[in-house]
Image (cartoon, rainbow, N blue to C red; front, side, top):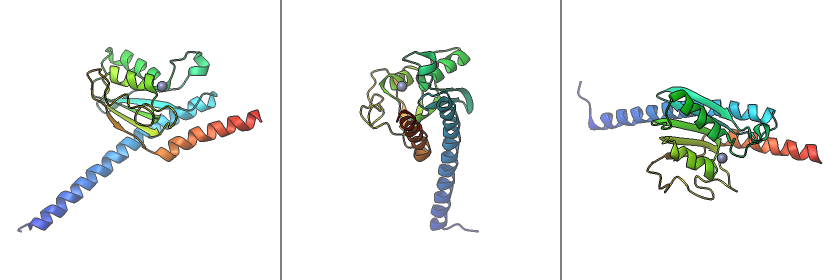
Length: 176
Ligand SMILES: [Zn+2]
C-alpha cells in the first residue's frame, strides 16, 4: 500500500506527540519524588524543598532541605542531593545527570549544579524573590564554569508552589 505524503506527515506528528507525552510523564514522575522529599522537610519544620538526582535512568540521590535541623547555611536540598550523588558515583562530576527540584534554585545551588556538571535541571515553582534560574538572576545562562545546563522551569508548578505556600500560611497562623 502506498503511503501518501500527508499520511507520512500525520504519522510523524503522532510519533512526535507520543514522544513528548512520554517525556512529560517521565519528568513528572521524578518531580513527584522530589515533592515527596519536600513534604518530609515540611514535617520537620523546614521550608519544604525536595530534590532528586537521576543518572542513566536511575535515581542516585534524594534529599530535602535540612537547614534548620542541621543548623548549616548550605544544607539546601540541592546541595545535599549533590553531595549524596557524588559519594554514590565516586566522582565530583555528575555527567549526564538530571536534577529535579521543587523550587527554583538560589544562586548557591545553581552554581553547585553547574559545578557538578549536571546536564539538565528541572524545577517546579518559581522563586520570584531570589530564584537564580531566570526569576531574579540567571546564573546558569553564563556560568563561566565550562558547563551547559539545560533548564526547564514550571514542572508541576502548582503542586510544588502550593506546598510552600501552605507551609508559610501554617507558620503565620501559628505565630498569630
Ligand atoms: Zn539553594
